[in-house]
Length: 375
Image 1 (cartoon, rainbow, N blue to C red):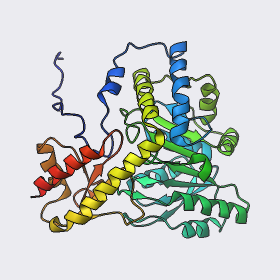
Image 2 (cartoon, one colour; image 1 turned 180 degrees about the vertical axis):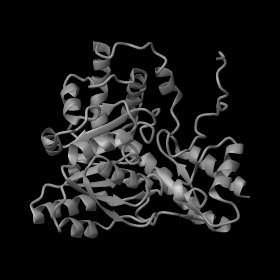
Image 3 (tube, rainbow, N blue to C red; image 1 turned 30 degrees about the vertical axis):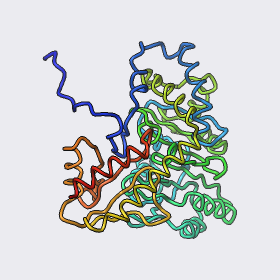
């Protein structure tokens, strides 16, 4: 045993860390976590959660409670399945994280049918309708913004297809949505679009440290959860709902992360959710325009098609002299952090995570540095 800390990466100026999760965290939010630990059943924590409640509802665009779990987003993905899939789900797959959502259905002992399209593509709502109208489904899983590819699925149209299939078949079909890189980076209208469960993680567009997950459930999702045996314990939404009425969590919360959540919620409220969404779209459009204007000379192109691009992460295809991994290494040498391609796309793409508290000016500086690296 030694008393020395392991070597850590050197500190860099804020605004140079464009990984598509975990995203950069503002120093004020990091500093909030240095407060002393408190009892998690006392009035102080309840007061904090009471204060963040309206901000979370505004971010999720809902009048329903938004539950806070001390877990990664994968935890609430499993919670969505255990509480929302009675027997059989249709899983929409077009990348690594939608695969994970699909796999969780089977891992939780439910039947699953996959509607898969190639990476870089979005799902066709009419195909969703045709598959559901065959009957026998009680849920759909979908990733709104696929972080591995930068593709934004047409969630409004998919939700409409699910509702049409419900009308035709007479089956109640819940729509379970991973909004990990869309919630907080764009206006995801939970209530207006008719989403039954929507989740995200703290470390993406919310610009918090990793370790928290947020989710909101429709009333009919809660009604179903109450009838499903074997929901598990850690992600039992009925228990979350019972405790949230007291502005508490059913399990011991990560208190220091709650301090960060309180600080960041105040920052989000001060900026405004609509303004925050507009800033993300402005950054995304700037990144797309840069690739379209300059990319061809280095064999770069946008991986996602027009109209189906995420406002928080841009995936850039590489067909030139250097791999995506090499390009990211060159940026690292200059003090910038980008994301390599994910999984099968590791060397053939790289990713810019323009989300959280980043600004257009910071993105412009990154793109200038990328141009130098590319030569």
